[in-house]
Length: 504
Image (spheres, rainbow, N blue to C red):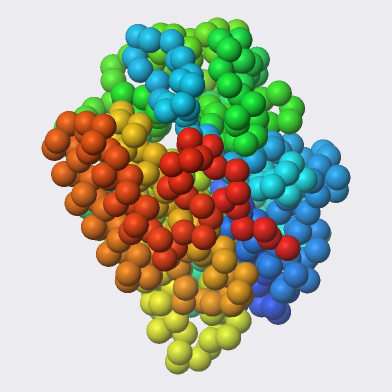
């Protein structure tokens, strides 16, 4: 059986970005078709929301009359409205500096810890998304809205100009689809870049990292391990397990995201070089070897059991990717397809949601107009600026992850950029040409480049206490125009309680 359809816009990929964009475009009045080669529910690594992601999601739900999405923007409303959808409590970001071969011992001055609040209480907190649950929920919303949705469908491009002709093979049927515009929301699968033979510019990016990850149960509480050693956890602005928890390592870093169902998303992100090759040992052997190098992590995972994916630990090649083009006359890549840097600052959801918002807006206002091409280029330029900035910030953070007195002030650049964007957004609302994290603020970009040079000088001088103190003050002075959140406060002792913008 062959089903023949005609659409204004075809979207390939039914993850968060693809499903959400389909819902928005349908509300605008476009004829949309959503395609995916897999099916839900399926494993996807857990992700963290941020105040930016929550703010954008809430705005989209209101602007496009999609009230069922709004509860996902806060931990309190999520748990109250959708208790069947698994999430985790995220009060902020936490970082702990590990040394190979040594158990972690918290210092009285918190000199090897950093906690940065992102909400004032649990009810208003961000969330960790169990993507298998959230992706399924959004795909069901697409179907409930009457949008044609074809999963388990392998797509072949028959024609791409002047309109797209797509052939789809699905169990029990064939699909013949014509569409005026195509959006690639397939992420790492990169459906359209592969089909168009676009060049991957990932080698030009500064950051170099790969990952090993899975979901586990019975991961011991880091908060309780600290308490058992007599650490001053009462000084923490929130329970550190209720955060995007980062363990900074000699090889890179480890993330831990806890969900309400007892599952923890955990992964190592390891720095690589141009000459790096994947190790010859299995992912399981590499994972265990890393745990064994860090006694406190070994203790934390001693009773842990992998619960997903069923096939075993996932190990990636180099994470960084960036396609040479992100838009064309009749196509566009969503941000997660267009490029990726690293999960160190949990920017993925925010950039995806901002990209969906911009693309929906420009299609609504410039569809079938001569202005469309120019605004598609603006969209691509903004995505490129965001990738550039995150690449700079992450690469600098990697360079000093082993010197915590330099890592802490350098990380303040990200938090200053995030809180500044949040405030601008609250004051001026959505502006399609504004990039997240001050990425198109020329002065802020100069600040980042200036401090990156200062960082190289500090590293060249062995990062003595005098050098790290000077760098801390350099950062504090440089970010002053962007620092309304009390960052770089020596009195805070790395415990930041009031950085979050009070979102409505």
